[in-house]
Image (cartoon, rainbow over all chains, first blue to last red; front, side, top):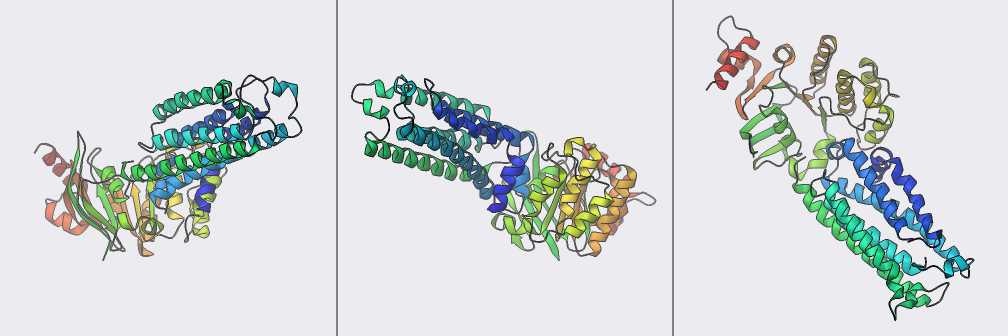
Length: 217
Length: 240
């Protein structure tokens, strides 16, 4: 597995995939839909898939002495690493905003979603959608990228819009908690995000393995 | 002994089909796979490597079915295809660095030997190479791990006559080292120069799969060269 991951990171990846991890820092931006940071990180991954396709990466990988499902595993592994690195940056932003900056007026007066643990869970949900819709969709053909990416964009921005304004609905104000307010609820929502990401990724991976085994290259 | 057994491969496309393709690649032999453009050579090779799924038929390497033993078989098999551009903007040395970690039998000495023989600069990127040099780079990857079977799809196309000659000599060297070499080509003189066995495909159907001597005995008319025989046969097949 180590050699597949090294190949993914050194040969198949576009440098943009690494650079766009920095969009995780958008969790510091006041008055901006912070979840767009998750979307921009996946945009870097999309570039990476494009880059790999132009380099004939899939056929090259299949010709290596590994099983076809390991090729799929390598792609999912790389995607998850980039997502988790972005999440790490987002987590740092959230911790700073929950502690040192919890009373900062620029964040308190923000009409959009606050970058709290719920926002981290929501970012994981967006990443899960990318894995389910885009990566899973890609492995139906191993070359068509446009269609699954358009489906992902529409779904992701719909979800981002909902997550960003959800706290304005009466009764859901607590979703926008600052600092450690409603910490149990925040933690549960983060946990729900983790579970959703895991479920979407594992389901997508299994389906992708099945489909990739069937297609002609 | 057969290193590779291809049996009754059928694959249908809307405008082309492989029709019950069967042949053997024998150990310690060079097998030339000949046919005109579009005759089914690459489709057959793709089916052998499990890149496409035949509608029916089987492919076995070393007595083991390919579909069940893919990783193990690929460890013992070298493959190269014409001028396909792998990672055009990565340095050759970076591509090689990533590839060699997959092979238990990577042979650094062989890699250096072929790098020098093919006059390849490992600091260059594939996009900077001419078509012929791309072929050599693909061959370099296939030859640098000790394999028992070497499958090459049109390895001589795009090569200058000197490099082609060198390559055909390498095939003979590899055969003497115990490697079964299987290469497709539409250049009959390549077959004439080094092949022990001939697999001749036309319109998706195997016309002949036999030793070169038997092929000449069976199909050549007196005084006819192999090239003339094949041109006559292909003409016959085309107009059949």
